Length: 528
Image 1 (cartoon, helix red, strand yellow):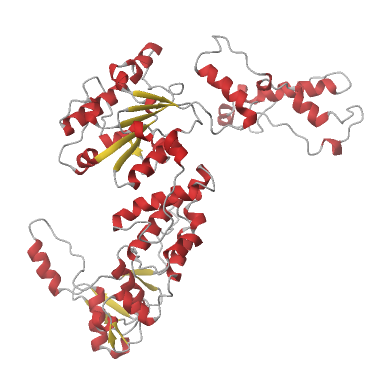
Image 2 (cartoon, helix red, strand yellow; image 1 turned 120 degrees about the horizontal axis):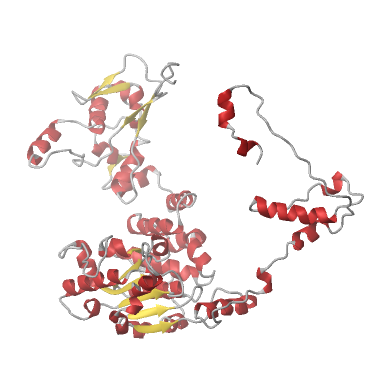
């Protein structure tokens, strides 16, 4: 139909010309394997849009007042000769686009800033020259031009990123700025953006401890730039001693552990503390989880299948698809601790495959190759999912039913840190059910059985149905999830109304004589 009506299959109002932004002798080159030398020779003879712009400014004085980003409006880049040629017509609907450059590539970032503002440049040296003084770097040139307003550009960058980036991504940007941005006052940058940098940790923990965890995360990110909180004069991480005691940190270093606790007892809190503590002292730790959602709650967390390359189809002799002498294998060899969340829902064959992998990599026959591994989760919750498996098979697939479970030292978290004081009794009752202390028959509390009269009484108790008016019924409604519940409530309301109940019957029909319409709407639909 679109083609029959001769509508446009595509429409473009403007032509966008991508302009190169590269440092001297660092233009990108495309080549095939084995032809690197020829590609370099060709690149030496061909000009990019940037180097050709330099040549244009040397030879054409009329181009001196046109910036690099505006040059496509007045000139056309001939790819065959790699030269800019003056346009004969048009140009109003042409846009020159300089690609976005990450601040991580700092010199290109500042070169792009200069190209947006300076016109008539004939070389890279010309761009670096400001008031007769040749600067060493493009960043210095930006400073001489007055394009850098102290740390204001970094404040602007963080404010802009906070509009659409997550707190974790903001912390990565903060560390990147500190590593490459030559910030004059890092503590002030932290103070002014602390709220957005700590938002996720404050939500997860509290306003008091959230900044500690954010700083610990930044400390870890800064290690990539050979920096630390102390070098940047930022507050050092001071996690409460009670947290470390609760995590049983000294015990965890000695042997494999199983952290068993119901929901809300602080398992994730313990994981985060261990991750920050171990990473804070310069050691490696690998956090994994059985599901992707659980992995997002761990800083740097990934799924166990991704880290260990666990096969999808598992059996008692399965092995992980991770090869030695690779980056992934080296990471496992260097790690001091492996944290595995939601372990109860992982099939025992997956643990056995990881056990074989670590033993092969470390050349050690101890469980998990002698690596410290912390399993966490709640066996009262979801066990391994077995396709069409019986209850016996599901239980048998759990790690607790394997001899490897005896090698673990068990730690139990029993206090619910998430429940309010008024909900303690209810949470304890739920825990008793999970531990089978309530017997085979469970009596639900009365609040679990709301009477159908409750919403009716709340809405209509002040109405005299013998003389009710439409105005009195206005603004009163009861929403239900299905028609059966709706009919039940309607029948209760009818009991309050005076008079005899009358049932009116109706016959529905289609106002069409077309037999095809009769087939479209069967009798069951018209008169249910």
